Amino acid sequence: MLREIIIPLTLGLSLFMFGMKIMESALHAWAGPLLTKLLNASTTTPLKGMVFSTLVTAVLQSSTAVTVMTIGLVNAGLLTYARTLGIILGGNIGTCLTTELIAFNFTQIGVPMLIISSVFWAASILIEELLRSGRNYMPQLRAVQYGALASAGFSLIMIAIRWMQSVSPALESAGILDWLIRRASDSLLWGAAAGAILTALVHSSAAVIGMTMTLVGSGALPVELGIAMVIGANVGTCVTALIASLGGTRSGSFVAWSHIILNLGGAVLFLPFVHGLEAVSAWITDDPASQIAHSQTLFNIICSVLALPICYLPIWTSRESRPPAQKTI
Image (cartoon, rainbow, N blue to C red; front, side, top):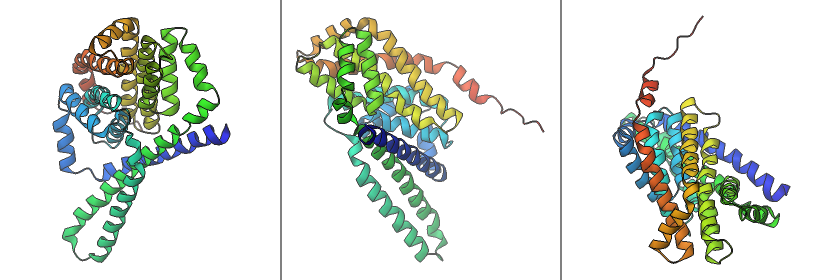
């Protein structure tokens, strides 16, 4: 138990936090006009932010990666938290492609990405030392260095997530997964709880949804229970964002808690309508496993569209416009 579960989780969490801080520091130092302009242009409205985040998440195949990057940008002061609401909603939509292409694992690029980033960083340091007199090249070299460090920090986060995901076989051997699934068969609420807990433990909603698709496809679980587990998995995936916000700024914590509230609200809203979601998914396809994937897509799209008007409330911008409190001496 200690070697298979506790140590990997502890080391993974430590590496996660280390990579997060490296990425934040590098992004803060790397904050150039082009990056700031791109962020501002892509998030001027919640709708634009949602569309932008949907595309980015679909490309990266990881809503976790987009959420972690968003928190890092907010902590680095490159993005205000009011502009992150659309990004959160878009991340939930874009991750549906991950469910449809469940075999793809984005965390596999962590080690290659770290090696490439390290090579670029070391090469830029060496070139800087050789061209000390060429001051005109210094800004470009520094940009490469900071970009490589940010990329290295992000790759460490991906490696950490993969480490934490590695405890899945040990959890299964210990009977924890079987216990959760047996309790989940009692009610849809337990099914949602099982999906949330499993995702929080393995730090991958895609892994939990993939397991659920396998169980439903083999007939071990009914479709409606599988859909409940998928809904719960969307709540459990917020744990990674909460971890990423630890030790960060207040705005970064706001992003994480907004992610939790939006996903939890969607789960509470949809749990009473699991049978309706099953009916719509069955209308799309007869394959039980595919119905799980389609229900995930329908759930996230509908929840994000329903929550989008809330992102336009003036309370978010009014809070940012308040002057900072004066310090008393």
